[in-house]
Image (cartoon, rainbow, N blue to C red; front, side):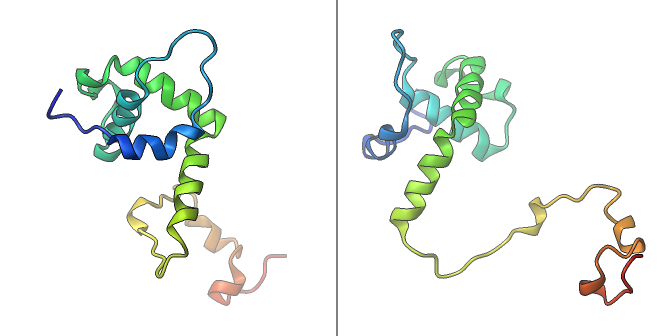
Length: 122
């Protein structure tokens, strides 16, 4: 397990207050699960391709889905961003913005008149 990405103890202490409380049954190691989630997302893997050192991929996936629905990750990201201060520069990476295949037809219908200077649709 030494070659796996694991969050440090200091990193875990910063985010642990935002974890939901356990209801009777002890959870699988939070550090391993969160590290596995980060590893899969950062590397663009399927959940099934997570290294076995993080635990069963189904457990990692279930934790991600459950905590996402509860808003746990949103709270963690918001708090970490708040403590970081105001950004000096904002950027958008357009390679990750996808448009639906019918989005091109919106131009023909005149739905973007202010941007293109086209006449408004009736």
